[in-house]
Image (cartoon, rainbow over all chains, first blue to last red; front, side):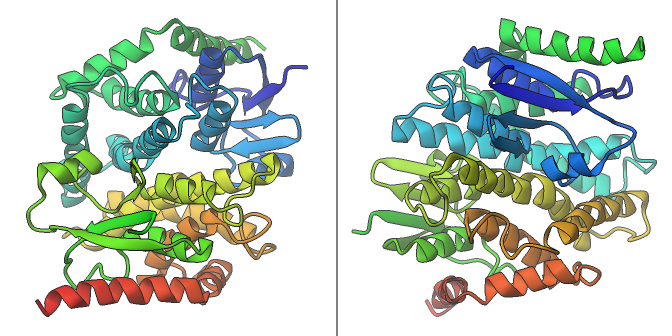
Length: 214
Length: 214
């Protein structure tokens, strides 16, 4: 059995395929060159065993020996702690990666997730709420656009922070939210062109496609 | 000069006082027993030096020697790495703290921040957007209510995860969002009754009050 096991849903509808967060774990483990297996848990019938590993009833979680971890950010941090090329040991570089990991999730995804939710809420796109959330996301993207104007990756080299930030931004890109942000777009293209991303992405699609055939 | 320096705004309006995120850093440093200073940066006139430390123009950031870190989650993680009683070294306990640190910010605050924004947006509280966000927050709080039914702190003992989760939940509590969640309420009361929280809170209020007198 592999040292690392990612647990994700056995099946999801077409729409989220390619964007389920086990992709972050797959991609990081691929980049780290660590051996892993993928296991499934029921999407339709979430049992108590699921909640013991992931108390919000979501996926993924990662097991590594007797350790079980949920939250994609914490999973990335754990994989980083097992792989110096994704999370440097040198304190200053390490802090830089960690701050950008949190920034991806708590400053950018904090704004992009509600924006995404409203794309599929039966509301008025001119409502005060939708305008407020669009402005919130735009303010964050304007800052990211400046940051990405003069850096290839968020820290000294490609890291777990780039995995998180790319996965957050590519969902915005999917719904044309990066049209005014060429640096953000190019960053997404640069990161998702990495062979390890491509493998992780294809593997996730294949995982859910296999469930359709059963 | 102290080893750790928190930089926060020189002044903020009355409304956010007691809730500015430098509180998370103050509280953690107090719990860790680490010596720190607090420095100010202009609220009204954010200069390029500010953006070098915090690219979104927010506060706080923490400096520790030649390390400068933004994002309250990353600051908590860094303080935890300097203080074993807030972030255990034992891998299983460490992972538990890390997953709950991310859960506070990326699962709970992800839902509570938009809910909070809409409290102060000139919209209709029966709009599809506000209902959707309220349901999103409720779903997360329902899970937290179960988790907090049988645990005093999120990991084996009080940790940086509790600092993040408490600070997220007490803002919900401020606007009566925990009325149906007694376990969450009691958790907030338990954590904010700690003398180190009380000191951090009073210090933040005093910091901004001092600016009024100038």
